[in-house]
Image (cartoon, rainbow, N blue to C red; front, side, top):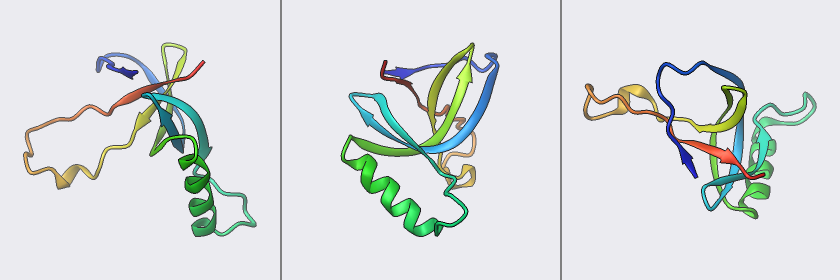
Amino acid sequence: MMIVVEKSVDRIETGRCWAALNDDYVVAIVSMRPPRDVEMDTYRTHAIEALQVLGKVLSGDVVEIDGKKVFCKRLSHKNRSKNSQAIRAPKMYQFLE
């Protein structure tokens, strides 16, 4: 289920990750921070492959909004928009409980 959040709500970002989504709910996450002794490209490849078994994989941030953690999909680069006036809100997804 996608969540819509007003701009005035306080949010605390807790970390970047990849998330597996199934029916618009986050079913699993893997941090984007690899252990020091693991090569980033190898870590990324294996993390994404593992999550693809569970569902659609997106990159984003885990954020806390009003005491509840949600997954916030990362937007593409701001300067790539064809309409410079359009302000897009990121999509947010609840964790499966």
